[in-house]
Length: 348
Image 1 (cartoon, helix red, strand yellow):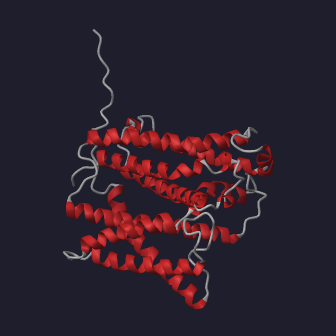
Image 2: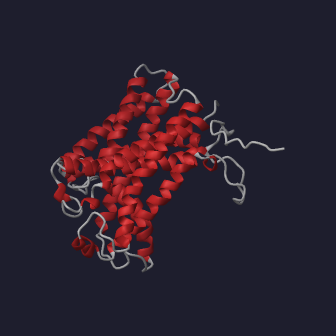
Image 3: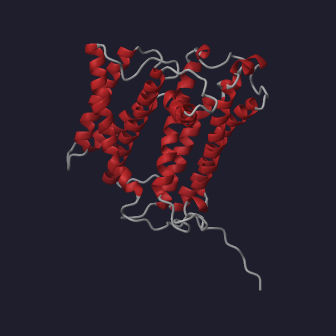
């Protein structure tokens, strides 16, 4: 007697415990937001008053390209003050201003994570493994001489990404609790939208990866031969970034696959257990934020007529054109992660 095989039911909600990572992340978010305020606000004030190092330095890889360090410090002071007030008002029990404050916190968080942060945050994350290998004297960056200020600026950009995400999560979480609003009405709708979002989020980085992989093997895809020669050993750094992009694509597929909800049975210790929601959602939202911020910087440079500030010449389109789609990648990845979260969520 033959039996039919049913596809896995991805609309099923695996049980989660009240101490799962999403709960811990939600509790940590206000602290991350507050840490950004108490770190960056004094840095900006001291830069204006005592000419100490600023919390943001000018770079063509930012949507704030037209601002000086002093002007950016003024912006950070304004944003930090608004965030501080919003954090206080939004967390006050029963406060009449808590809902507007929560919305303001979301807006400020988006500005901080997408504008104050910039491509340096993504560069730091992407090159971090190669930096570690360089300390051991191996890898494509082993012989490179990097100014220490580059690391400082990149860490500050990364801090703004994390602090801004904390603000958005805090504000959005409060709004959801007060209004009862949900992004997806049913697990089925979350799955349908999530599949489309995952498709886009997996395709866009592949466009970037293909060009860098081609360069690594000596194929000048989308660039001049001269540009490829000028890259020299740096093309292997691009190969490393491309490899990360491919791995990221595979992990993105897990947001709509059964193996993204339940660990494979052969995995030691956790085989057959539900995948913690935060293990999938937190990295996805973090990557979505930093790639969107970087993509917006590239878009701003092109739309503002500053193409000369980007790698390569105008005819070397593969050096900068794939990055123009990164905001699409980031938005799709964020939707996919939230759809995954919605399907896995339970009433507590």
